Image 1: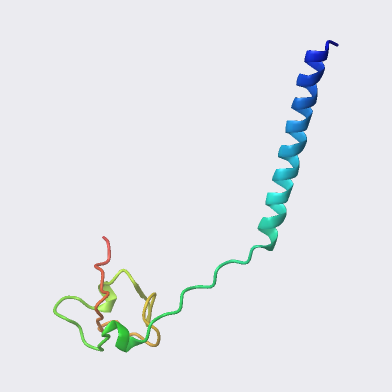
Image 2: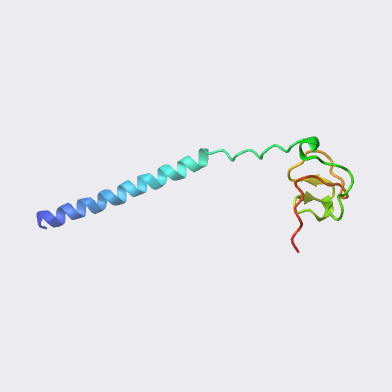
Length: 92
């Protein structure tokens, strides 16, 4: 083997080894990464929540409402006929 092809061969092996070690390190790091905690919900007062609808806007037709009585943003028991300032029309 010529000196030049030997250098190419070593570089190729080195690249394979470095990539393997890097991949293993990344996989190991992923095992130890903790998932982020869910964001805390806000108090009903902070969302201007009310137990009554605002016109045709009510929790039951909001995309953030989680039946039967929860919301993705507002903490506590949520009335399907309630409303808050974060109301977003449900798709469909």
